[in-house]
Amino acid sequence: MAQTPGKIRARPATLTSSGSCSRAGIRPEAKRGQRIVEPRYFKAQDEFFFDLSKWTKEAYVLDLSHMRTLNAPQGISRVSKRLILSYVIDWVVILVTAGVGGAFSGITPNKRPFYLFDPEISFPYVAKEKVSTGLLVVLGLVVPAVFIPIVCFLFVPGPTAEKRTSPALIWRRKLWEWNTGWMGLGLSLAIAFLITDGVKNLIGKPRPDLLSRCNPDLANVAMHALGGYNDRVAEGTLVSWTICRNTDTSIMDDGFRSFPSGHSSFSWAGLTYLTLFLCSKFAIAIPFLAPQINNDISSSPSQNPRNSPHSKPQRRNDSTESTKDLSPAHMADYVDQEITTGNTHLVATRNQAAAPPTYLLVIAFLPIAIAIYVSTTRFSDFRHHGFDILFGSALGFVTAWFAFRWYHLPIRRGAGWSWGARSRERAFGIGVGRPGYVGTEGWASTKAIGDLETGREEEEAREARSVHGLDGTRRPSRVE
Image (cartoon, rainbow, N blue to C red):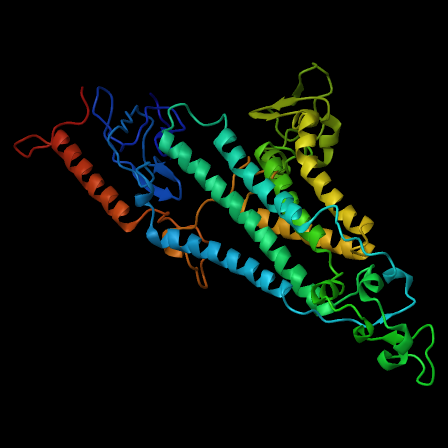
């Protein structure tokens, strides 16, 4: 097969370009009309890049049947323990964050003074809520946690995976997507839980049903007055929570946790994250146009169709008008047409994207609809004011988006994948001067790298013996 200079990109156990591939090394073999060249290769996270920039246009044989790669599916023991520990610590941080939020919920909140004649806190106390705390946990945590592994097991790695991909590699992808899916969900809920319960106790805003919980002592209002006129009790007199005769501490403390809505923030944090996860895996997104690159068609006179004397744009409808500017500023002229000019083929704008099937909107909207229902019940149950619900919903939405983007690629450009793992040497930090957490050392253990180097040396020794004669003289690599 003819091979031009460049780079061949190879995933573990597969080679995406032409040629034979398996878990192996490159073994150029001398045949008639061929010259043996030792390729250079390096590793970048989950992939090998075979640098063929020094190869000529002659034919080469890629026999990859004996190479032991760093990412060959040989079990979890091949992964660096340092890297595994770093992700265990990530889980510990998420769980500790949620634990701190739970501890906040048990602290006595600040009790903001209130007015006895305030209609906003005069609603009746509803003992049985439409969405209890237990049901909230099921909807916001359990439901997303169940659907995430189901989606990962059934739809990962997707139709683009080659049939020859090893089962171990496929399961590794499934488990990694499951792990990042759960980590994002946990991060979203933990942050929302921590912020919500912390702010609740700091502000201590009365709930709409506070007066029903309070059962104020109206005969001794002056003893608990904090504002207004000193000589008499007026309608606008501000009173302390000590005026309440209800001795149930839990009911009274909960009566001063109106802002923000915990049900709203928790449900939106979990269910919005589920929506984003599903949109990513099923490519549910509004169609968009990729950014146009000016340099491709109009950055120089030789590339500009108008200035090239040898290439004129031709439309598929054989229109005689073929000299219009093809720069991005004039692309609107070709919304319905495809253009071929020289070596450049411009796809019609309207054919560059399409809307996903409408039924997928149901999949994306259903978790959001559940979150909306949970939020509205807090208003109908007189547990929160309108602004409390809106703020809690916004808080949950923001934490869900942040947690999703922390572990996943953008929905439009990520093809449904999450970010890969950190590199071994950068598992706990990178310091100053490094651009990111992915290095050339990948995530394999030091022992795995040593095995790879040993295998490579043995392979090179075998190749040397096949090239040189037994007497030490070099055999010709080209057969005349």
